Structure formats: structure tokens, C-alpha cells
Image 1: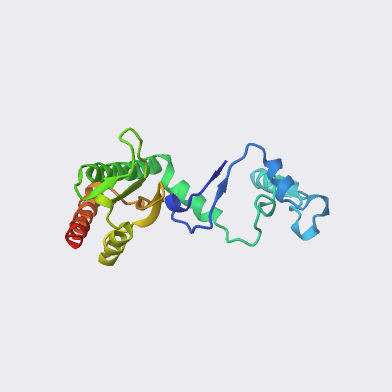
Image 2: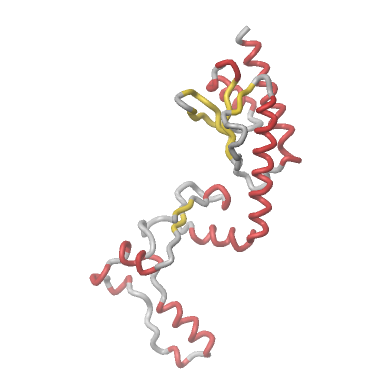
Length: 204
């Protein structure tokens, strides 16, 4: 199973996760096989009886573990695993539950406003669940790309272009860890209201 943790862990886009129940499958694909050079081999467990038991056990575990070099496709890539691990440990399950919950609540709040707006069309069916992505477009076929340009010029919120059923649309992706309805919804809605009204005025 693969995942892209860049948004929730605030990492660059070249960061990815791959989950498997069988570590040997990874080493069989990414490892050097029987032709492994000595300088890439795992450390030796010899001499562990000459150190305290806890340290000896840790060294043995390290020596018997698969090398990180043989668990992924790109040996020269930056070590994204460390900051991702640090983010997961420091934030914890409850922390991420709170972050994701706030992001979903924000996206659904904005989507509900868009659905009732005279200037925008929500491009989702009423029974379609919304997580952290909101797709919408200006009403009455007005230019979605012009709307994006106007929103970006103000610099208050960021939206990106996309297509929906062959037509230009707007994508609002909620990703910042601090986003919340209380802190960000009013500003976002005010910007959408302003630009929506500008598009109507420009088309008349």
C-alpha cells in the first residue's frame, strides 16, 4: 500500500510511504541480491558479549535488520523518513485525528457555503462526501481561470486549476496543519464572495 505523506507531515513532494507485511519482498526487489559489496553489508554482531546486555541486544537487532539501502528504490534520495517519523511521533494519533478533523470540517463548511452561493457552483453531488478537497466553478459558465487569477492576486487564499468533466474548474485543497473553521472560514468565504461579485460585474 502506498501513501503520500507530504501534506500532513509538511514534507517535500518527493516523499512517499510504502507499506508491506513482508519485508523480504522489499529486499528482494531493491536489494543487491547475492552480489552485495562488502561496504553495503549489514554490520557484524560479533563482540556483543563484551558489552552490557541491553546494548548487546540493541546491536544485535541493528545487525540483523535489513539495511535501509535495500528497502526503497532510490539510495541517493534525501532521508525523508526521519522528519516524517519525527512528525508522526511528535504529533501522535490524537494530534493527527484533530488536524484531519479540522481540515475536513473547514472543507465541508466552505463547500456548504459554495452550494448556497449565487456566484459559484459546487461540482459535487449532494450525497457525495467531502474530505479535504473542494471542487467548484463560477456560476453561469464564467471563466474559472480568471477567477483563480483574481484570487491569487489578492494573496489571501490559494486555489489551483483543475478540470471537471472536460471543463475548467477550481480546486481548493486543505492541507495546512493549523487550518480551522474558526480561524480561516470567514476570510476564505469573504474572498470567494468578493471575486464572485467581481466576475458578475465584469460579465455585465
